[in-house]
View 1 (cartoon, rainbow, N blue to C red):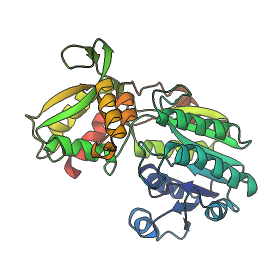
View 2 (cartoon, helix red, strand yellow):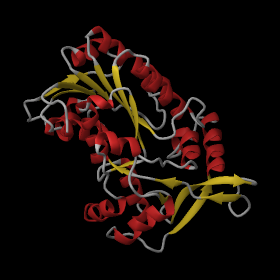
View 3 (cartoon, one colour):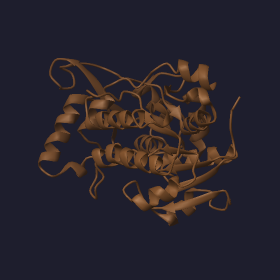
Length: 329
């Protein structure tokens, strides 16, 4: 049973994929929500702004005044902000993940907020294969050492009808996304040269979790005192390879081109191409970066045993959800 409701919760990244579902989940639990947004017009489209319990705070994690408005009088904060690759305009892993966490904790301490939930990811570690993993782990460390009552949720691949992953797969199976005539995906290079047909490769396992289930876990973490000081794996109940996942959508998505062939690319070869593109200033010509290629070769699975025991976490199967997505795709 939940131990609290009707509190004021500040949410960062509120118009993002995870953030918008988190806002709705918290409102559904009877909380007041303050949503940190950069674009008020976008917020009007993706958030229930007609709900009088929702207040918009315009700004970002590097706007001290905005963070203090977000935290002023709040009972808790939820940090859903994260980027999967760097981009121009200051969108770097250090600035968004690490500096952002420091600034959010600073505002919480100044405004006497006692509780924080950090959304992280399966596989983050201090010696990760890429800066994404290392910076997310550093952000976790900042949260752990904040002196606040914290909870960290490490999610696997998050999916939903309006998420980037589902849109990407839709583009692939319908032939509308590059490269149009085949479907590329990364495989893990086990040994040998990073060349298809020569190196020994295998498919990584994924345990995709529905965005609604992640949002539910965030809400439940806030409402249960037993969740304080805990790190939870938030994964779906099914383990799939990327080919298995793509095949599901080939079978169920209207207008899918079932004859499109799936072509595996060694993760290290993909990373090498991305590295060369970065060094020559062409990194944004690729739909992925070096870290994304390397992470695609790692399993993103974990048993959510503690989340099940502490929170009552019961995520929905991906296959059942894919059925529901098909008409929308």
